[in-house]
Image (cartoon, rainbow, N blue to C red; front, top):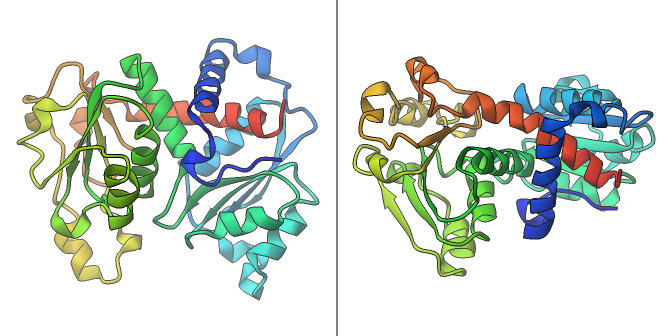
Amino acid sequence: MRHLIDPMDLNVQETKELLALANDIILHKDKYSEVCKGKKLATLFFEPSTRTRLSFEAAMMELGGNVLGFSSADSSSATKGESVHDTVQVVGCYADIIAMRHPKEGAPLLASLKSPVPIINAGDGGHYHPTQTLTDLLTIQREKGRLEDFTIGFCGDLKFGRTVHSLIKALSRYPNIRYILISPKELQVPDYIRTEVFENKHISYRQVESMDEVIGELDVLYMTRVQRERFFNEADYIRLKDTYILDTDKLKKAKQELSILHPLPRVNEISTKVDDDPRACYFRQALNGKYVRMALIMKLLEL
């Protein structure tokens, strides 16, 4: 039995196979419409979510399976003091696979140690978000035709952004990727990412505070929102929330083949006018999330 807790739990070959399966699902949806008939997915979301939870549910339904679970800790026995350990052991009696989101880093890993069924980490605090990473990899592959030899800029909240941390780790296994980290000093990538990924693997990167000075170099721009829920005080959030806003004027300096990604939800860091630009990939990215989760469910259930 396998779990997906960390984006590195799948090696490069397994990731390649999973993305190939996702692409095949996109091309031949009918072939997979009953693969999970009789199977159940439990979505245990102790933290709010729209895209991730609904894409998991849509993925299981389109595979012919069923879904049960909760979308808020308030509607679970966590309000009575039940531990994650006990929750997954009980839910594992009713479901074949579990997708869990939790505000505390490490909660899905703890759950996996006692779960009788596969656990998928659907986001744990500011730590990792491996299925978003798979979504991002599929999107980059489909938009650029490759997962190597490009320049990617990560912009916004790089300190608390679990999607950023996960994708940086995953991309570090592919050759000739150039990293530009765009953020205010207060929101730079945490030390463990600099140490574990860039320094230990001898990968060069640049840290800048201005998007304007580097946007013309980028093949991929990964935008993120400044996350109110990760801040300890409202004053810091208000001071930093509008630091970077991508608009049509900034895009005049960008390459015509630029791909703009965003894990969503968006607040105001990308102008809605950008949505009509063919370089905007974030809604296609959200759709790709459903297909990659379909492939992952199949892989973990060995179907």
